Length: 383
Image (cartoon, rainbow, N blue to C red):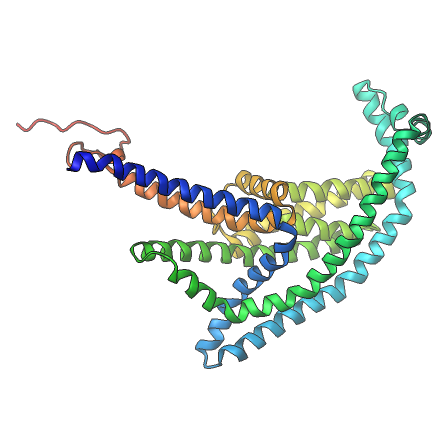
């Protein structure tokens, strides 16, 4: 009887795994299709998840859930409002300065940067990138240009609806964040009720590990981004860069991407210093600002506020962010680190199960591991 039931059992397990694979593929497809709609929901869920521990702490202090939610939501909204009131005028002035300085950047690019590259590579780039040559190329291909203009107009008409959707998402975000913050424990309880009782303990442990790891990382990383953004903006402003505040804010926001964030800030700062002043003294000032910022981040901010909570290699973080952005746009970038952190916890659990399995360790007592040795040694015969 056992031999006849074994193939049926294997077929049932295969069909069950096939069903789960189909469900995963359907979820992936829905995320890809509904990415623009899901973005405010995911961002609101992240805000609710980040604020839930503070709400629970206020509840333990004796306040009701509704009062605790209102206090936390008010503090979060006030902090966001203050940040917007401080940043929006500064960013607006910086963008206006960038628009006014664009001819200077174009002149530096055509008269300084390209000749320097041509002298060292032997490539003729100025002729290809000259504005007159581009104009003649456009006139010689006026039919294609007309098609391109039609495409641009079509994109602009579509982007008008995109702007309306973007504004609607901004208005919808605080409403969704409030409901996620108020009902977060209810959502968690309902999700836990769907888990088979056999696996509830394991799922609860893995979910708690993922939440603790990712929550600590995101809160700490947000503080690091905020502190470094202010430091870079103030430092570049003291150096004398007209676009110092804008470059500092961008460099601070990109800090969560290892190596790419600081490198982007350094490149933008060096180019701005060369265009505005054309000397190496201000370039050295830019390098000093980012050098001091990186030292403070590496030896104080990141170890103190972030630590190694997410447990991911910088290469894995870069890949997760870029892959998420490529697949799902801004929604993918929001989900990149949470998904990577959960995957890291699941991989650790799989490794734990593997190292405790017979496939890895073999039968108990069949081999003996000597202390300080990695390879299994055969048992010594008894004398």
